Length: 391
Image (cartoon, rainbow, N blue to C red; front, side, top):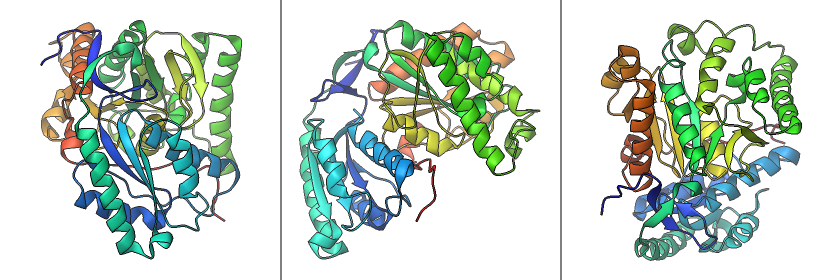
């Protein structure tokens, strides 16, 4: 049945009370050595998702904790019905530790170890069997009306052009305000791409402490670059951005900040950390598209809005990603990858409010089951922001 109520979407209720827009069974490899086996399980069992990565071993300190938090967050994301945690056996990020934490969410969790099973083939066999059982259970779950207040929406700005700050990003800002007005949560990310606009967001902070946190994460990001002998304020680091008409990092930042709308900034989050407050929040992520996308989904985002002035096929194994073009030429050129055109604002065909309302309807439809183009093309991108070396 179609959902004509603009304050609800049709979602899946989880044991912990959270709501998913998708009903995946996740094959979660906790070590790069298990990633290929996880991929083969997804090829055998319809209804499963996974990802290839290079993490999970010889990581220490904060870098270890951040990767563990990301693994947990992806499995705990409400879009995941159940998880098969697949490990090697001797890695730093022990699969049994991840599985133990995820079991506390109340969702079904299975543990498979390649070494315990006696090798890759037996591990794939066991993993496929338990995954098939979870998929059948998941298929019996029914969508139900869920309030927009239960949504966490990630926002992201890909390669920018001269139209980004005039069309797609402010349209996402309109939607961000609508989500917040309905009691939901909107995540602003990309710390590197907010350098130069931090003072505007700090003024909107809910408290002096949150305002202080804004300046702290900007300084920390700049210090990382300076430690490498680079001042990232001196120009834009992306050749694609420059080709698209962006003259400086500050110019890109002022356009990217429009995704935040006009709402009060409630808190600043660490990478892959789940929001503790409703409303607009800022997650500290790099500008790397895939790493920030992974961080927001690990933080609980059930859907992501991704603006682009250059074009991208980017998607997530966990959350639907709505790609939004800044101009109509790009939308027509890469229509197989891009879901939504905000270029009508530039052409004067629609107002910013019109496009914001249209995008809001697209979010409700997608959260209720409409597939994005990245999902249809199985664009399961994944990457964790590493903040330390491997040892």
